[in-house]
Length: 148
Length: 148
DNA sequence: GCCTATCATTTAACATGTTAAGTATGCCTC
DNA sequence: GAGGCATACTTAACATGTTAAATGATAGGC
Image (cartoon, rainbow over all chains, first blue to last red; front, top):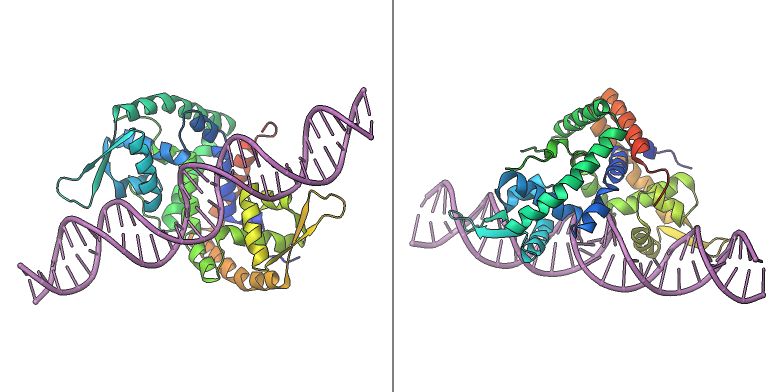
């Protein structure tokens, strides 16, 4: 009928499809541990930094603030995360993993890493590195704020 | 603290970040036309094929069936889409754009294409083609050919 | 010390994502 | 031609995505 851009050349669609393919096995694994994908992202970021405020945590875990608010409410209630007031700025919350949070990280981490290795086995490390590089360049080209 | 996989080398995270970067300008544009990203995906697919059943439409627009059900209810109510019963299989619905649906497609399509051109201008066509190729290969490598 | 703009986070409202279960129809086999 | 199984959705329930607005705290200018 019409001939706009083919789906095969729609970058957002290709990226979405690729992400779905890459995530396919992660969600059932995380679910078996009682976690969602997004909850795991938060836990993983916190595990790598010890302590972080909510704004930084949102950026690092690629979540919008309202989503993070709800996720933190849940994770605090489950006692995976503890939230404290920032000593110098009462607007901020400081988040960190509890012992229970560190424990589930230690349990889920290896399962997660195994799935990454699966992907690397199916798609050569060389191509994967090229892909990482291109995606990083794309993010810079499209003017994405990037932080560590 | 811990040393699992760096976020910078997590494929799902990189793909998510890249998609967000690529979509950043699309959502406000679509919103100015009263459409969500997913509604536009459905309309765009239907515009390219004239007629399609719901299952095919879900796959082509990368939506899960429950999401598509709700989106179609909305789009039918807005009279962008018409749904008919399949003549030979009463389980199936056959979807197509109404005249109003074709009209909004004609209006939004050029805006969408302009944003794609923006991306291509910021990120060389050559790199973009390499990226398309790699993503396609990744999808083939990871798409589970069997099981569910 | 106020005023105001900004920042950090939350709340609200609606749309979609995700899994599981439900409903209705079609297919197949005995 | 009745059972049994698969298919094509739909519903339900909960979690997250997205935008706008609200709340409370801070920083600067005056």
